[in-house]
Length: 362
Image 1 (cartoon, one colour):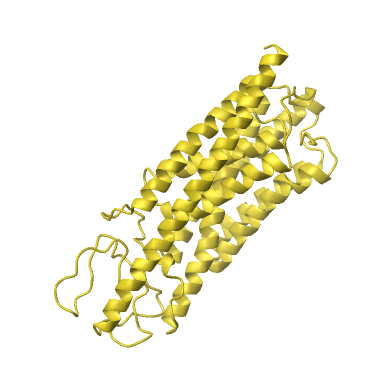
Image 2: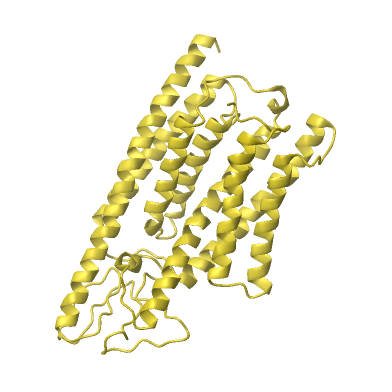
């Protein structure tokens, strides 16, 4: 493709990226609006229940009151999980049930308009983002992950796309604010700190292994991003549940839209297991590519070391949770540490350490 056309496609790509970032921002606001509006509605019902002398046990997506002043609201999401150490009792202050969204994360019957708008906007943003990634690839005449800018923009696209695909089977809209927020941060970082014009690949990257190795790495990182958001919410939800169980005031009403800490942990564990398999293939295919490019499978290059460190951390997480009883907050923190290692490998190692994998394009 002639250079002039390449440059034009690159400009179109930047325009699409800008439009996508703007649409993601509006979607982020809509997700935040959903949390705020739902939290306010739940507090209002709590206040009415308290004035009627009843315990504040309001399920997410509650329907119509059952009739009497003492009757609680009912709804399809009334599947709250309570800590095994305490049983919620109706009546006195500090003994309210710890109400969360359904542990199976199925869609309830309620119509949360802001959440629906947010999902629609995120879908539109992903489509625009896809156009940006495709035009970048057409402009470069190759797959669009040859430098930090392309890694970030493609990675952000996959994070958002995986999130939307997960919504088909699970009601994970409570993650929207956090996932879309991370996508926006990635897009801003790509444009501000790592922008690189369309160009050719260095010789070592001119291989079909680029498609195999990097695509799996980026997809695995996208899954790790989802579990990072879940683990962070798990810590907040766990603290909230302990506070309410101990008789404290529930100051995080919006967390009723979020499943229990146990449900978050179980889903995070399953997704981390899938992402770990992908990262294992990333490590294996990287070694095969290294042998093709440099004549050795392993050379203790900084990038290779940190890719292995990430593998060890997540392997330790899976093993500890499955066999050593590392559940609850300890498992969440180990998952978060693993994601921080992914971020360190992607940013610090790529930009500050010299080595055979110095392909940031900066």
